Length: 144
Image (cartoon, rainbow, N blue to C red):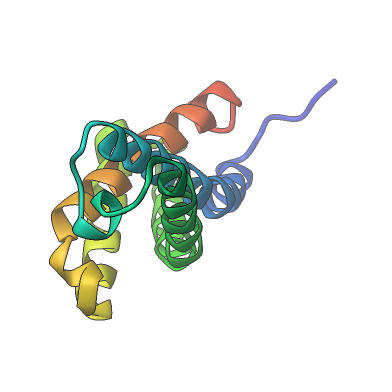
């Protein structure tokens, strides 16, 4: 006989999975979008100036940088999502997307530099990552 899963357990796993999976998903989105941009001749000058064989290395580097940078926003978003799950037992897709986009945008603005100049794509990628993480949590029966 199994015991029912409490909202506290759901919240813990929500935080843990969001913190570990969301940076990976963001890196995959960056890698794929960079490869597509390079293949169709779009993107930043640093990508367009490269030979075709070098574009994969450039995209991989940007994906690793995205993975490392997004660890902190993912942890903060995961903590907020865990709070939502703790009180409701679920995480609506709009809440997952909004929390991720707002946190990533705020941290990108605080970081300044190149990130601050790209807040719109950062917010979009974060929202997509938030929704994908929410779907993973539902698929894994962590949340309802």
